Image (cartoon, rainbow, N blue to C red; front, side, top):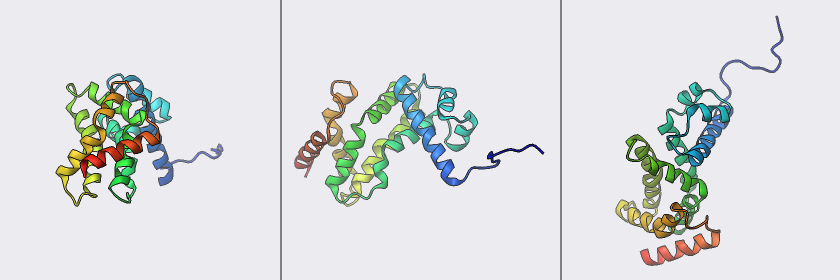
Length: 185
């Protein structure tokens, strides 16, 4: 019988599956940011991630699901227990003003009218999740959370989306969060 060396057969352990899934999502995010949602192909994502298209479909889903997973990944702060409202706002601003988040936002908006599933995936994994996170620090007040989220992004985020401003430094984000909270509270 020929030696198979270190090659294993069967399902990889859970930690390897999680690492592979994270790699797929990271590659998908990079591709979406680089070429846009429609131009991104599952073949290219699979090749760059070192997996098959079948693995992508089985583990994550179609392109809309990949975008949702990439947006969820950008919102990693959702797994962090914020100390208070200011900390929650800072975590959100830091995530959403970053280049990757801006690129994913642009990719989603570019196809919004053509593909409602993409819009829904982006909206649910992004703005709605962020607003729920804020609501937890506002006694569950969804309406105040919606308004705070809008103010937190506001004009500086729009300038980022339009490519008018670079990714802000931490001190700039802190000043922005302070100004928003001063006006909000």
